[in-house]
Length: 450
Ligand SMILES: C[S@@+](CC[C@H](N)C(=O)[O-])C[C@H]1O[C@@H](n2cnc3c(N)ncnc32)[C@H](O)[C@@H]1O
Image 1 (cartoon, helix red, strand yellow):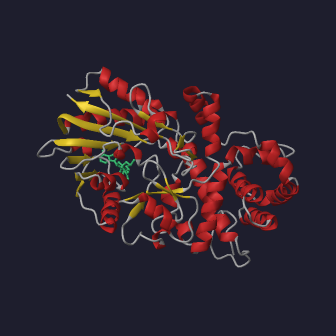
Image 2 (cartoon, rainbow, N blue to C red):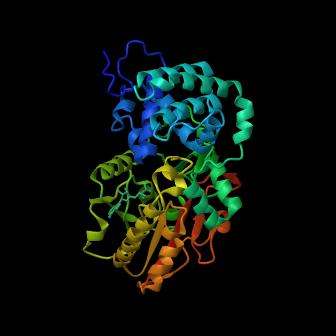
Image 3 (cartoon, rainbow, N blue to C red):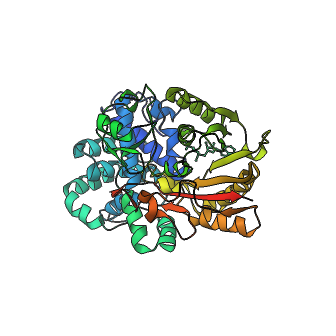
């Protein structure tokens, strides 16, 4: 018999569980970890090392669980407004677990193609299975049935609400203005396409894979069927998955033939692979051993080779200085919210300020690792100038031995509209590339060592 004092464990072997219960219970638990404990989604939704509840699901249920969590996070403030508009009085402030059950169920009713009755019945079963929520099972049933009945009316009522948390929307508005901040929010509602970087022949691979070659050389696939690893050219190591914006910073080095380049924050290696393909002799440095292992595996599949070093870049002392360095620094990742809609819910301004300090020290160290006249490209996927423009300006004002310079590849036509007055590149999910919407936020700047 179940111990009434303990919450029911998601995905366990309760005899009366309906089919479809385990992925929804897992999704609710994972949503709670993101919202209540600020746990990053990436680590949890991993078939090998992820959350135990997620790993216990069948592959099909893992797919449903992933879709539920991502959909709930993409639309969270809208879903909350939908639910609260149907309640006579607000949920008790401590009813976190209950609100997550309702959010996952409402995400299905409003945005996913699953039968409403399954979403409602399983949410009621979830409420009944958790002693904290049992007394609310009737309310869950009533609210969700009403939501299903009033779906269209509710969708138009919540359509104008930003999907972003308040702190993030306010900060983006401060930086980019009301219109662009709203467009960044809207971009987060659409699941991103899959972009590939290819070793060569983007047009040919676009044709073979049913995609489009962008002017920057990335291949964009609007839809894929089956596992990525089963697609043409994967096993042969002809391409790797990399957002079109993420491919910009390393591409701006242009031809690196004959140059020794250090990639200072290298794993999982998308940019390392680009640097090798561009002709460099690359040293790829990474602090995390497990991530470096992934980089090694990725390079092996691609048939590319680099010297790989497991080290903290702050303590790295090479025997000889490099011709160039790429510093793709750890950041708040706010530019990747289309792909990782948990980011705005797990990060805040304090994280951004802390990361800006880390990046300042890293960029200062990167300059020490290249020879005079050598180029450092600094990049990250934050939308916040504190981690980009302002940090670099501060470093130069503090007397770092470097000056801004043009990227070695110049200003490619396809990117001209993305350069700022200082010659740095800034992309946001509201920008377009080669006429296409759907881009991660990125910042990249080139500095020449004095
Ligand atoms: C944004 S990711 C890099 C992504 C990579 N450049 C790519 O394109 O695939 C940042 C990486 O920096 C690593 N890192 C963070 N601090 C580091 C340090 N002090 N030294 C070396 N690597 C570090 C992290 O483990 C993480 O893998």
